[in-house]
Length: 92
Image (tube, rainbow, N blue to C red):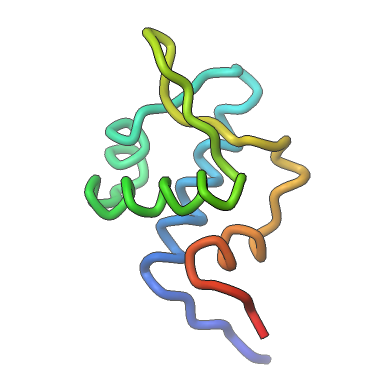
C-alpha cells in the first residue's frame, strides 16, 4: 500500500476547506481567525493559503458584518485534488 506524503501547506489547505464545507449548511462565512483557532493553523500561513484557494475559485470572500470566507462551490464539487493543486500546482 502506498501512502502519500502531504506538505504542511496541503494539510492546512485541506483542513480549512473541510472546515468551510462543514459550515456550508448554515450558510455562514468564517473568519480566518476562527478557522485558524479551530483547526490549529498559524493565522499568517492560513491567510496565504486562503488567498490561493480564492485565486483558484474554490473559496470566496464576503465583505460586511456577516463577512468572511465560504466555499465558492458546493462541497460535493470540491475534490481533494482541487485543493492540493490550488496550493501546490498540478499533480502529474
